[in-house]
Length: 148
Image 1: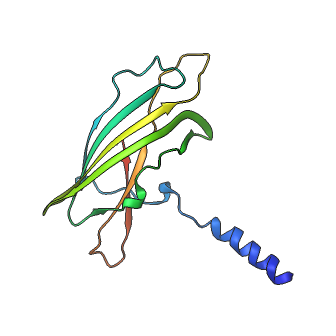
Image 2: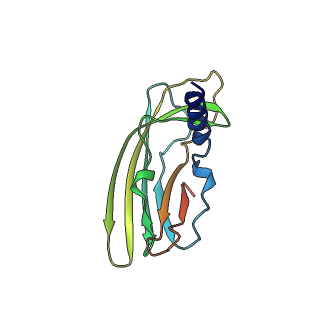
């Protein structure tokens, strides 16, 4: 029984070592370039409305995208511990590589599922992708924030 309790404590403490996206350093300027098409209006949303963001990210070689870092549909966003009331409903992506760079095209659809009595400007939450240089012996991971 003593070993079981010790094992459970070890498992619980190991989860505290999981890295948050904020823990990775930002990628240096000039390696990643971005083009974003945001939704046309910033206010006037009601429950059930959907808002779309189109993103094109170009990553210079030798850096590559870590595909597991793509946004996850259905994930409820929070800001300073409070629910935003916006969820990523769908995400489609294409990834193209050429000799000098790779291009990630994301089409993100967010759905509004909360309504406030007081009108306030709406904003779509930031997404983070991770990149790494496979030629680097340390395999150091960097993050990139969308939008910048």
